[in-house]
Image 1 (cartoon, rainbow, N blue to C red):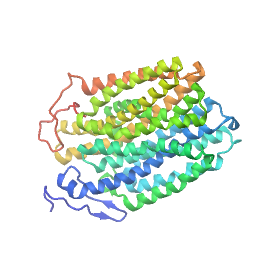
Image 2: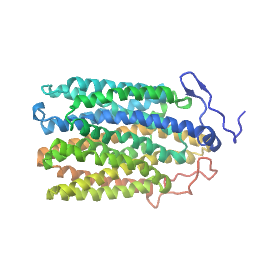
Image 3: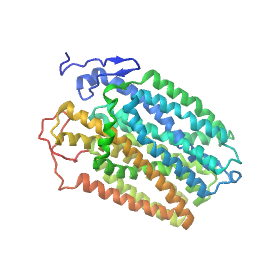
Image 4: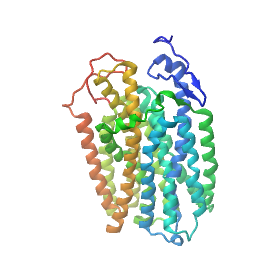
Length: 461
């Protein structure tokens, strides 16, 4: 029989299933859990990274689809909007998939599925292909957006609460960086005359490698399997939808701007495809790299506080963008846009850290203690992450549609930026009112094993 101070080895059955997992037990974590969790994190990042690259593939391809392809700027914004939409919608079933198939098993499947849109794009990428065909093939690329939801749900279960901000930030940041990586790859390959098909041909073997590595080195957690009811419980919780709104402001901005940045530079400032590509990758790169820092700061100071002031900074950057757009200042516009990318990445890390803290606090308020409270928090936070990630990604759809309408109506993106500024103000107000308002009930910060009197507090989520 295992005592509270021992760390039992996680027994497994066929297919790399781990039956015992208790990351909140410090001895278990140090002797057994951390090594396994970090290994799964690494290979989860690899698969999610390539998923993001395939999802945002069309943000690059449309830049190099010149007049010979017969697509208008409105067509291109519509194409990227629909790709973003599919990537958002599939995040919901991808969240369920972890509980049904197991985290390792689903990583293998979801990685292999990336071959479908990549091979399809390789087949049709040539002038003369109809817009409807490009749209259909682009929709297939949306499956890459689902990898984020399943990866975050899976990795959330591996790490203790005190490490979640860092782990989730690193997992998501490593995935997000797939956006600038494919943009850089396009710049190197297409810019050197290689053509879109060469770029696609490079990614096909990488997808195979990711699926094989997941099969060889990842694990499934038995206590996560067959808990599809968690998603239903999470969907009934108001905080899932509040955090979805806040995540629209951060991740919705990141993915929406990732698709739109190059097109805005082309349409508003007359940049050539190569000139746009030389700049486009910088914002997503910095936004991805800083996401783990957002999670770390949230671990240290509280996700709600970091998120609140991050929305203020995003509002300031957007106001500068409006001024630069009206003054037609390319230099100021580019710098402000890159800063906005950085802030969206920082906010991605801090908002996602809030999620496990919220459900942990709810568990304590319900009178749960120790591992029972930790298990409740892991169950609902893991399920809610997929739903929040899906709704957040819909913000990327709204951003691309807003740019499309702004260019059709005003010939620039200024009108869209005004709408984004108003939305960041809403996010600030909601964060303050729900999670930081001084009149809200508060208790001292407690751990998962605390014996403090249960009360509901969001002071440190």
